[in-house]
Length: 462
Image 1 (cartoon, rainbow, N blue to C red):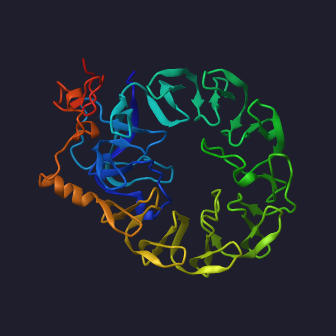
Image 2 (cartoon, rainbow, N blue to C red):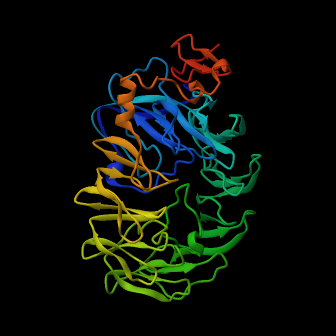
Image 3 (cartoon, rainbow, N blue to C red):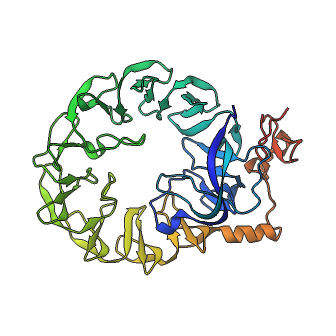
């Protein structure tokens, strides 16, 4: 068995980043992903390179750790490679053209100093840390490790989901879901064919009786019946205080954790956000908003709302709406505060919204003023003070004034000119850690003195 291998698709000709489409904020933690050619590293908020690009697979930090991957022994990519799998969110995909080959990538974890704390190659799959535990797979079975890499819950399950409120959903060999605690004790026995994670003391579960909300002991709190939901592992039950259940074909009703319902039934309905929920009026074929009493606060009048199928519409007091084929923003009274003038628009994040005009992307503030003129081929929303932007297929980061904080092109030019010396991470930057390193006998790169695997070539060290 080849442990620690994750299958990635690597394209050998050209790459076009997903940011060209303009997505939401990529939550980075204290460090931000950067790319140089076919490798990934991290910078801090000032733009300082903390981990030099060296990984063929990299994810944002979660609970102080990030998943990273290196090519296995004997694998060499001889031209620019673009990973076509997701790198941080399901909607962020990489476009490619040309020949595609399968490559198995050794996965492990680094801390926020760039040090490899769980060497690549131990597990067949690994996921982000949540509440101090991470899901891992050995062969086809799932279990959990702690942040030292120690297996806490043996990999014996068909599937596992992240810990939330001290419990994790696990699926047994008979295809039924139950919940275990952090010792591996089965707290809620396997009996459901679908489940969500816990949030605010409740999880949604499905069996032959339909959907129900249960508490952390497994007791049914509310019988929900039919519900128009899918169940990804990151689904948060009772988002905004209510769930949406079906009461007949194309008729939705809101219900809270106590079983109380909001008067009225709707053809289509979305979750509450900032105290309001979007609902569809079938007669006028348009969208409006209700409050938590069921009162119509903003009459149905809009062609489209951004992210209607996601559990947020209003963010930071404003919602993007389409009027007459263009996008603008309304406040919570329904007043158009930023006139419809954009070809596309995204929800506000950290005081700014992504907008598209004439094929280019930029940012506006909550008055509609441009803070970054639409000049970029693609952008992601601001997160922790920085936004990822793309021009000519190159990655960049800007701050909230539009100032360039880091540039892939400038970084590559500096390396070519010798102004930046290549290294394998923070452990090799001038931090006084050199004395704690040893040279890999296979590739001659420096690595931590206590490392079991080389962070560059992936070979096992003596």
